[in-house]
Every structure is written in C-alpha cells, then in structure tokens.
Amino acid sequence: MTQEQISLLRAIPIEDLASRLGLDVRHHKALCPFHNDHHASLSFNVRKNTYRCFVCDAHGDTIDLVRHLLNKDFQQACLYLSDGSCEPQHSTPLSPGRGAGERLPFDASRYAPFFDRPYLSPAAKAFLFDTRRLDPRVIRWCRLTSWRDRNGIHWLQIPYYDPDGNLIGIQNRNLMPGGEPRFKFPKGAQCGIYNLPVLNRLKEGEVLYIAEGCSDCWALLSAGHKAIAIPSATLLNPNDLHPLLTLHSKLLTQFHMYPDRDLPGERLFLQLKELLPNLTHHQLPPSCKDYSEYFVKVKRNGEL
Ligand SMILES: [Zn+2]
Image 1 (tube, rainbow, N blue to C red):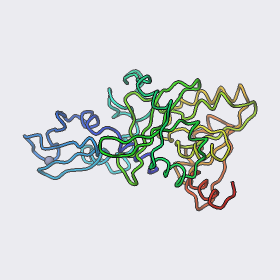
Image 2 (image 1 turned 135 degrees about the vertical axis):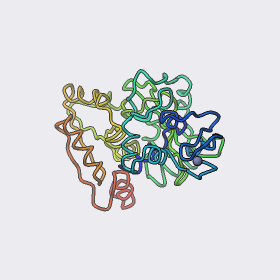
Image 3 (image 1 turned 60 degrees about the horizontal axis):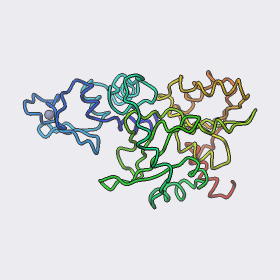
Image 4 (image 1 turned 90 degrees about the horizontal axis):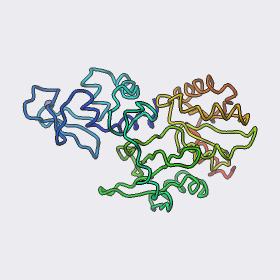
C-alpha cells in the first residue's frame, strides 16, 4: 500500500470507526476496550483523528484502533479499513463509490461558490508552483482553491466534477509538511474519477492518460497531456470506470499510463488492463517513484 493510501485510511473519521467497531462514543469519549474501564477513559481527538486512554495509555490512529481491537497486524488492519466493511453509515465515505444508498447527499450548492472564484494562499502557491512545478493554466482549469481552518491549518481544496461540470465531490489536502490528517472529505462527497470534464474535450483517436491520484494528474496535464485520475487500486470501484469503457467504443480513445514504480502501481495497471485492453504501459526512470516526481525532475532539467 502506498503512503497516499495509508493517509486516506488514517483520515477515516475515528469516532465513526470506533462506533462501527462497537464502542459507545459520546461527547468524544467511550469506555476503554483495552482495560477494565468504568469511566469512559478513552478520549477521541477529532482534529488529530486519534484516540487515547488516560488510564492504560492505549493510543493511536484509525489503523492502530483496528490493529489492537481486532488483533490484526498493520497490513491486515489496512486491508480491513480499505475493504469498506467498516465504512461509517452516515459519514464521510472513505472509498468513493462504495456503500451507495447509505451516504448523505453531497450539498454541492454549499461548496460550488468556492470554486467560482478560486483563491490560492501563499502556502498553496508554494506547493503547486514551487514544489510541484505545475502549470498555472492547469490549476485554473482544475479550479483548485485553498483555505485555512480554525486551527490555522492550510488546505488545498480539490473539486471533483462529473463530465458535464457539475460539482460532485471535494477532497481537502493538508498543505502542512507531514500534517495529519492528510486528507479530508466533506459528507457525501463522491471522489471517484478525477477531471471527468476533460472527457468532453477528447477528439477521436486521441490519447488519454490515466493517473493514480490528483497530483499525478496535474503533472500529466502540465506536461500537455489529457489526463484523468483514479483514486488507487484498493479504492477503485469498477463501476466508476464506465465512462472510460464507452469512450473507447465511441472515440477509439487510446489509454496510456505511467504506473507508480512499486507493487501497488503495477497491480493497478494490470487491474485496469483487464478492463481497458488497449492500455499502454510507460516506464518511469528508476529514480522516480511516480509521475509527479518525474515531472519535477524533467522541469528542473529544462526538458519539457
Ligand atoms: Zn484504557
């Protein structure tokens, strides 16, 4: 599992997870399941998305809670969390597209105005243009905006649109180095395939790149390609790929991909290749773990 995927698992609301695991959470507290507790000693920190018992000192994040409560190792706990079986019924969906019918509707009218007049804070500009070297035109097309929460944390706000440009979801990305949680999603957000509006701009026989995650998608767009992003192998809902399948039959679209240089990346490629037989594999150089990193290196060397 990649760091991005693990961050997503750590972003599952901890109180919802605890309730799902059978704890009776009230006012950010519950009876501690790790010692013989009678006083609700287990506290939840919703901002950090962690738990701590002030008696037995049991503490940790979402993955730790599953590990200790269900007696699983790290990997099993991650699989458990990404499987969707623990998804809270009435809260932020972790795996986009799963548990449909259970989630609250996403209130697009509440969020859409943010993206009509995007604002990039100095922190957001530094991340997008200095660290990632992205093209400002791409950032405008993607309507990225930024905000600072009550705790002074800077977030990049990433809107998800359907092919017709209707807002269907939002992903918040923490801009503080090493900041946790790394991602946040408003209730009911559907963050399946990213950058769907580009599909309406595809010409017959044109190439469409498939990226893993928004960052790689912005880099591919900045390199002059047409690109969409899927969340990741574990979070991928095959139903979300439907628009891509029809594209191939309608427009003879050629699909291309630079899989991440790791096992999950290659696995994702093979999984997609089964659904999109004409998917072409591009190999990243050994020194680059993903396309964003490759893009930054190429920009630095002035090759693009
Ligand atoms: Zn305890």
